[in-house]
Length: 365
Image (tube, rainbow, N blue to C red; front, side):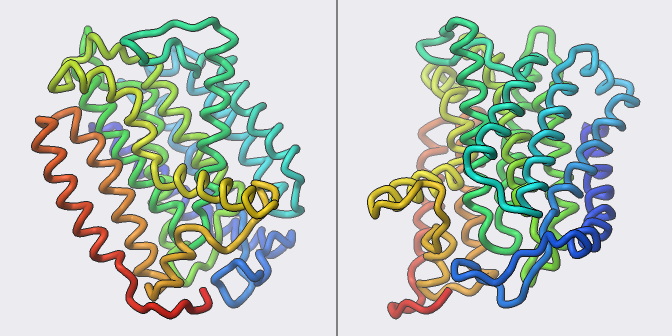
């Protein structure tokens, strides 16, 4: 655990320091978000924060190669593949932050980043359906890339308020870190040093280092470079862990049913809020005849503002819902399912009461 804490700390420090430099760079090259109808800020804000987070992740990887136990992870090429994929997706997002790219170019870049990770071994080996189901290699690679595309776009869709995306990903990564670290105790032989756990520790550090610059009122946005990077790293951890864990041999779950279902639904539950927001946006836009990727001001965070919650309160509520869904899903792996479900339902009721509209009259977000 000490090596993971050190990785988190180094990623946070390097991200925090690099963010200050990147802010000046964003102004210099014109990577500035103007005030648009769908935005909630009132003055132009520089973006490109994802470049700073990529620097923090690179620092964490460099540190990992020098640590006694985590250095063993670099015997395979998985982390190299993640680093290359992260570099591709950050470059893609940074170019988009400077000059808007069309949707097809961005999709091609996401597919390329996912394909590079799969080439270096970060891919599903099976899917946890009906126990363990092994599919043909091309199908597994396609599913791997699909997970990357969904995850990157989900984080990008939820990035609409100061501190929202970084905080939600920090919570999701923390829940996945806890699950992968504790479950890996039950490997044969036990080994808590896994690629997924390393990635989530570094990811938490990147978010933690960026958030002081991004809390409302934000001094820097993460931009597409950050949203796509966070989504890719979260998907890399999910793919690395989920596709390798045999649910039939996991003794971390408290029942056979939980053991089979948890590896399948845990990644979805951890990313439930961003994925839900993305699905609602796609349905909403297509129903009114717009393209699915055409931006609007009707995301979940916009709705919270419209029903009377302030900026910081809306972000806090999104944090709360993310934590309940992510931590609640992980809890099923280590506590009796019935008791966990009862406690989770009670907490969800409390969250619903806190989210209840504070005024009925819609206001400008």
